[in-house]
Length: 149
Ligand code: IDP
Ligand code: MG
Image (cartoon, rainbow, N blue to C red; front, top):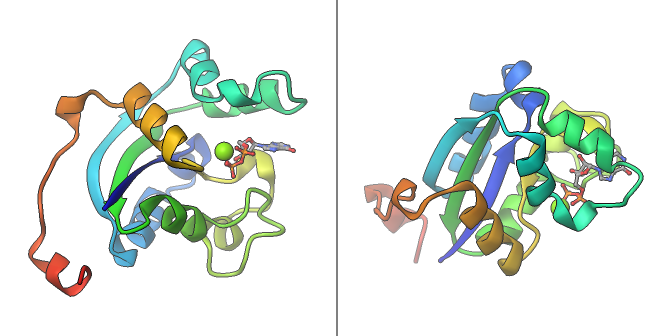
């Protein structure tokens, strides 16, 4: 079992795609371990996207991510990090495979709907940045016996 951090960006909320996007991760078999709506400050967004400081798209990215509330989640499952990224599709929606969230619902990198941690280190760091330990839930679902061997 692995955990990953996923965030539905402001465009997902504004376009009424929260349910649709959450549904895709749920149907895949991932378990929702934590979930909340947050409108982040620029300072918080800088922390989350610290790896991108200095890049040409950085200011636009901060403006985008602070433009409205987002839905933050921690998802759990076998290979959750890789599986969540694959379900999202490539960063550039034009290059994302059909059937992925980004390909099916977006066109531009600066409005690509969803964030997912890119490895174990970022998953742990982002989960810790966005969630307190008491906001994450350890539980099993009856259906897990049919999803996990
Ligand atoms: P990821 O979200 O697929 O992990 P990253 O390279 O980590 O992609 O970039 C973070 C976010 O910054 C992207 O999801 C996208 O919204 C934005 N971004 C990345 N590269 C560009 C770019 O070249 N132009 C505009 N926005 C970009
Ligand atoms: Mg990234």
